[in-house]
Amino acid sequence: MLHLLTDTMNVPKVRKWLIHSTTALGVFMSTLDASIVNIALPEITAYFHTSLANAEWVVMVYLLLISSLLLTYGRIGDMYGYRPVFIAGFAVFTISSAFNSLSPTIWVLIACRALQALGAGAILAVVQAIITDTFQPSERGKAIGINAMFVSLGLATGPSLGGLLVGTFGWQSIFIINIPVGIISILWAWVILPKKSLTPQKFDIGGAVTIFACLSSFLLVVSHGQVWGWNSFASGSLFMTAIISLGMFVYFEMTYAHPMFNLKLFRNQVFLAGNLAAMINYMTKYTVTFLLPFYLIKFLDLPTRSAGLLMSAFPLTMLLTSPLAGTVSDRLGSRVLTSAGMAIICSGIIIIGHTESFTYFKNAFGLALIGLGTGLFLAPNNNAIMGSVPKNSIGVASGTLALMRNVGQVLGVAVSGAVFSHQLAKHLAFAGTQLSFRIALHNTYLVAALIGALGTIVCWARGSHKNI
Image 1 (cartoon, rainbow, N blue to C red):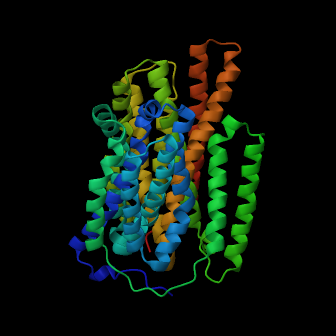
Image 2: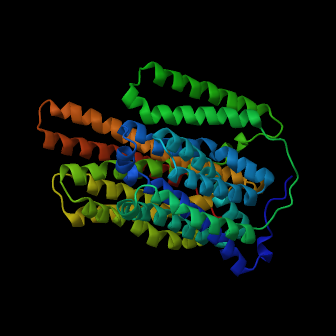
Image 3: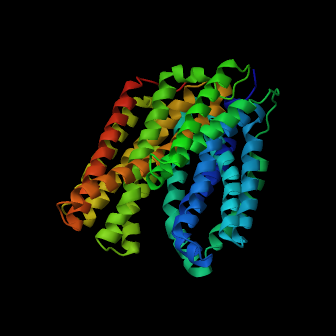
């Protein structure tokens, strides 16, 4: 058995929060970089004289590679320690940021973004594990809640900071800014994060390769299947690759002496329901955040700044709620908080989906409810998942949780895009463009609310649970 966890009883309180600060820097920089690039895409497209379809791969390759490697990084953390994975990830992230800013062509930039994703994936995969490793069960929810606050801070800061940097210094600046922060973060983590004494194990190469093939194929076809056509050769080939790779992965994990992922974790009701609920949570939220800008800017003709300010109601409310919800979950468990959070998210989506009339207050209130619900859901759910697994599997659990976030994001965009396009085409036959847009958006948000209602049921069905 690996000795992985620090003796949390003997770690001074100040040291615990210093360790936590390294994870806060990690998730802030990773989520900031995921959101800051979107606003730079138009300038990147113009700078390289390329198409938007090519430029979108700057974002897509980052998400695909991070998602496909999270489980592998989590397992490596369980085997060799979270400190080297975290520091190496930050080093790769920082170096590749410099390469990004120097890219001479769009394809070099895409390749450098792929390298950057290798680093960001390592950071995100072990963050929850480091927190679980450091804090006692009675204080873990608070720590996870504050960490979630930095996630929302990164997402909220990205668009506004990106717009300022791109407008003032050019698109290269969104990558250059990572370099000094990355260097400071690496040095800080090197000093603060504790070293571990570990017993080496054989790495499950077969499991790592097959799960990478499965996830990358699945996420690629889900994100591009509508463009290619679901019946196209490319979509069919990727679906088959995902299914075959999944079957091979299960075989490897059932037969290998030291599997990358212990499939018995899925017998754990809290682990299974918590991860399913996390995926549904991100799926419903990204339905809103993907379509709402089009409604506000293209349909209502709001200024971009006004639309951005309005949409900030979501992350700002989440920012305020997450630490409190995490603290409360240390005492009450996760069932009530996560169920209430998902129900509140559904109510917020329904309010925003009422498109017959628009007011700033109504939409800000709906977005604030989604932020409130997310704040109530996120930290308690993460706390429950991380507290439900054996100590030698918290890296894999951390990676799985991060994977569910990314899968939910991709599914949310794919499902909302497919439903909206179908509804718009259906109603254009007998209604005008404006009315058809409203109806399509309303029906898409209704589908998102129904998916969120399913998430509420999943949260409640997990049963009562307190940290272990």
